[in-house]
Image (cartoon, rainbow, N blue to C red):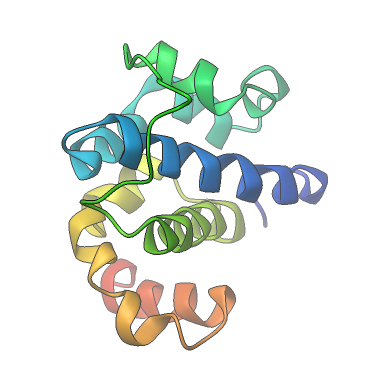
Length: 140
């Protein structure tokens, strides 16, 4: 059973792609910020399908973490933003499809490790990539 109604899924993909790009552009250690986000109470409420939290913007989400967002920040030189978007899709899909808590996912598939799993997993669909990650990291 999915974590929340599918009608939210597309907006969650879009929101998290933008969120992870903002993190890459505004945070010195993007992986640490992603881990903090995935473990926060705010994200927990999203995992529970709370519409109040599912409808918040990426800027509001980062503000709740104490991150000041510079919307005119340049593209990240440190992080490949395309990979960051892919990571956002993977985390979003894993949480939604398998109804797992984001904190459980990120503690088993850490952002830095997932970042380097882009090759070769990017060659498959998000669904197949997520399934492979579940088999490797979450079925124990």
